[in-house]
Length: 93
Picture 1 (tube, rainbow, N blue to C red):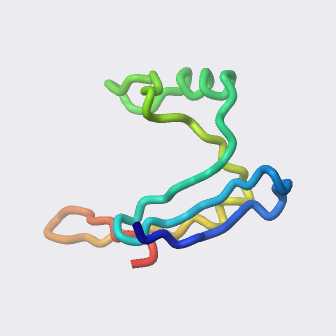
Picture 2 (spheres, rainbow, N blue to C red):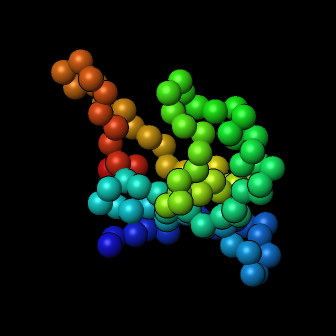
């Protein structure tokens, strides 16, 4: 697996390290951060997302809270329009 380190929260204590890596083959981000509290998860469920989507969080997923300082490490997403549809390039591609 080809990963590239993107950044770590500069304000985090030594034993807490929100970190972001980029999977260079897929463009996926791997994020280590704080697990959302029950109250935060409840708020996410109240807000919801799009009609028809469940607000339940499956066992193989979780909601994480990413410190605002970490947004600077998120790669810009490039959008290419091809044959009338959008294609998103992998960050860093």
